[in-house]
Image (cartoon, rainbow, N blue to C red):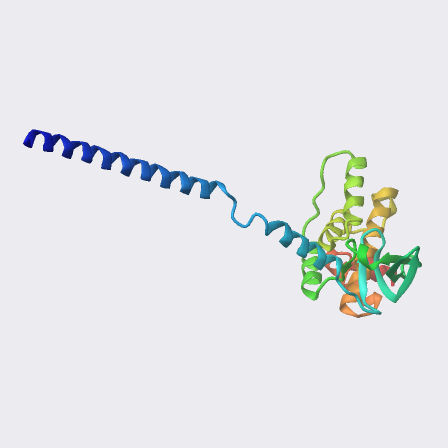
Length: 224
């Protein structure tokens, strides 16, 4: 009789060990399943949609200055409505005075527009103009394309870099090729027009500020 009891006890111990191991395995499987599942995966697309809507629904008011990358600084002269088929469309009328051009930009397709720079951004641009130009040794045709892309990007820091890199500190035409001079003048005028809109000073004062940063003070004095 005692021998049989001992055998039963050992069997019970073995069973309990097995059940414990099985329970542990189940728990590890459950925890691994939880790790593999991405928490909140359904919420991510909603966050992205909200961000896109916020940029598209930006509201500009009359007489606000905005920047359209391919044409530079313009001023909103009107907010108008039009009906195309059964769809009502609202759009901005933007006057680009430098180019004597009026743009029509639908409000729901205004992702290319940006507000004019802040005073801090203007000060950073002045700091960029004071730095030494970076001249690459690549072919001019390739560099010209890069400069043109920067000018039309609508990014004010890239515009300042083009002005700085193409600045020759001289008014002698022979020291600069025709295409270089064209790109420099285009970038210079774009940057100058944004300086005028932000600082709200005369074009002459803006030119003096920019030329001083570029080391072109002698040129502006000779022009006067």
